[in-house]
Image (cartoon, rainbow, N blue to C red; front, side, top):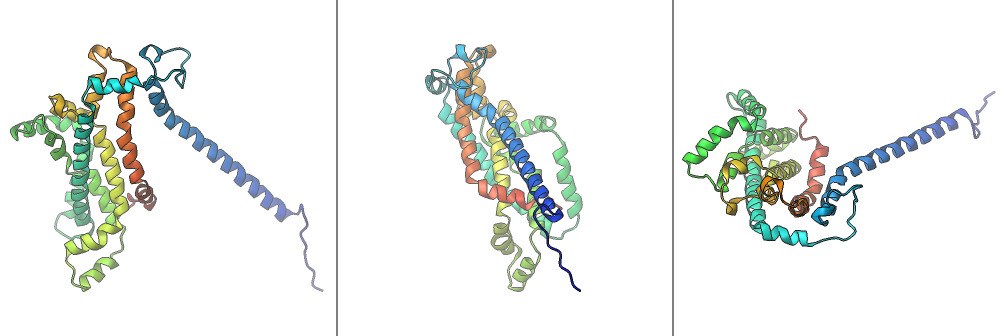
Length: 295
């Protein structure tokens, strides 16, 4: 005689499903709480920067501190333009960061494709020699670079910041990993159709690694927009100053400048960086999800 088993409410399978649901909801709430906490930690300095830029200098360090100013003072933003040539410095930073981004996208994509897809003697040795340069700090090479820039007559020019930054070991590594992730079938089909290596690179592989190019572009722009060390060494005249040097001028002699005016300049200098991030956000997230640095 065949018997059937009927599960009623409160039976073992139902209890297991209910326990799994409760565990899922608890983990979800914990995850959202941690994300909210991380967001607050990340955004707090930006909120404090903007709020302090609207305070009078005497209110900048009041105790207890106030997150929002009671009487916003927008004149601090006008003072930035009065004390430094802010627009010119923004333009200089845009020229330097934009030229370096374009140059690194070209050099890194070509080098990454060569190391990923072309066979030539000493490829692995040369690649790891390039990777080894990432272990050398910038401060260790600044003197020979400065001497070379001086002999080329490029001191106190924006070119002194652009030319040494065009080759990039990190960008080469990053793009090599993306090119290695593209199936080789595309290359073989293009070779059968009679395409050369430049055609395969430009028409087939380059569009497929657009997320990797976006990641490299955003990281490079952010790094060179905020760079302070090399501009401090190579630039002398204020007409060529980039925005980090301009913000340093706002601090005044012996730090006697107004912190509210400095932070007003910082708040305005963040606008291009945020704009570049939002423009490349979709490709940036896609590139990170693709795992461009996997073997």
